[in-house]
Length: 176
Image 1 (cartoon, rainbow, N blue to C red):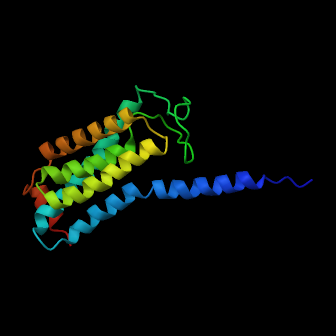
Image 2 (image 1 turned 45 degrees about the vertical axis):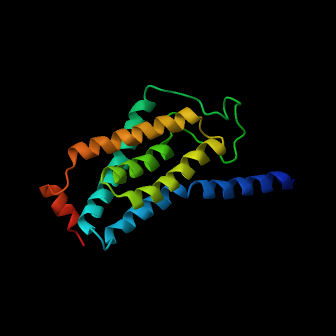
Image 3 (image 1 turned 135 degrees about the horizontal axis):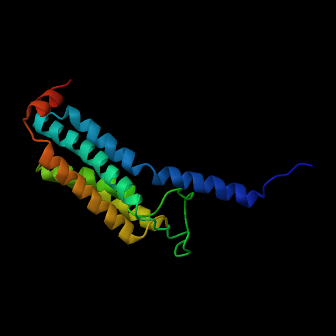
């Protein structure tokens, strides 16, 4: 006996996979934008410091999220029946949004280094990422706000601990 899925389910599954790919491109695109800053021509070492700060803030923000997830177990809006999910479901808890944390940590790190044009471009990307998490039904607005707060917190902690022109910074920013 040959069992096949109905055509509608196959199309829905393929459409879901395509949407998931489109929704997952934002943070990698921001990471690529930060990596490309390494070869900036103007104010090279300051921009490199900002790029390293953004990477550290990104990682620290996500580490903060993992700590929060030990204590906060908020179900996702689609599991609660509040939204209709447009992509495949996630396996972890809803609060805080890792996408928002990553995007806002990068923006905050560049903003704290007084790089306004770069900050503006990254802010636009971050807005689209944060908005998409609500639009596709995978996060509540407060999940995104919580992720933004942890992203800023990570950037502030990096700003306080990783100083420009320190021995470590001079070593790291002079690579390549």
